[in-house]
Amino acid sequence: MTDLGKIDASFFDETIYPNLGASRADVTVGPRHGVDFGVLDVGGQAVVIATDPVSLLPELGLERAGRFALEIVLTDVAVSGVPPTHLAMSLTLPPSWSDDDLATVWRAISDHAERLGVSIVSGHTARYPGIDSSWVGGATVLGVGDHDDVVRPDGAMPGDRLVVTTGPAAEVTGLLSTLFPERLGVDAETVAIAQERVDDIAAVADARTAFAAGGVTAMHDATEGGVVGGLAEMASGAGVRFEVDSDRMPVRPGVERVCDALDVDPWMVTSAGTLLLTVEPGAADDVVEALRDRGTPAATVGEVVAGEGVVRDGERVHPPDGDPSWDAFDRLSGA
Image (cartoon, rainbow, N blue to C red; front, top):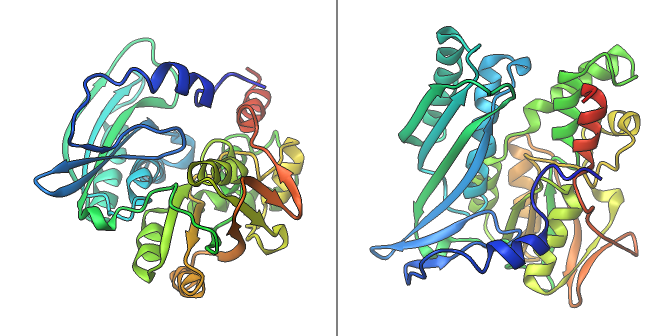
């Protein structure tokens, strides 16, 4: 398995977590493995904060690349239940990016931020030598709200229901079929369907919708490690067991064919845009209905019980040591 992607939990626990600079009383939620955000107390209000790398993929089309990048960085705050409100973004671009390219991407980011009620308050934009990839900077997102509204990813309790939006591997399916359409070894019709999955990688509005429906006790974005990895982090943080019925999991068109061609388990690969939620039992139907009303596939796929770990169809499952999508990317790119 490749060493690319996020550092593992042991390195975080041994090196990152013990070394967090000054201890301050206004930090009410600090860094935790598997927790998407931190929380500061500022004048009695909760300021939710998260930082992510920025990836811009011109192959998506510059406007869609801008919207996609923004959704990825905003989601880590959105899953707190507090809507993202402010954004600082640094773009460190390759010299090959023209002013017209940058203008197209920036306007797309700004327009989408405006639709989501997010103000861009600071940033840094430049071209530098030596940059030759899509990873072109970083962004910090803030959400300002009430402490009582903060939903933590470790808030699941026995009796809660598991709700999943979109399903596994839409991100990998959409991105790799767009970047490498002729290398997947599947027919053109399947490629075209798979490429539509890029539009599923948008979870900010879904997080707002789920929270507004009520009863959400935990919420997490299924990024690296996929659905299994995200569920395992949530279950471990809460000290409970998640029991999942795979037949009830939503699966988007094209996902199974592309993942078979890539020889990856769709449940184990990065699935940005897929929300994992635990919901009070009396509210699960309302959450699912609200999400479906806005056009997002969603389903109740299991429940939370006493115990530990993730059980799928009666068998214990474990997250991968590293995300298999990185190896699939390397094979397709010929790296």
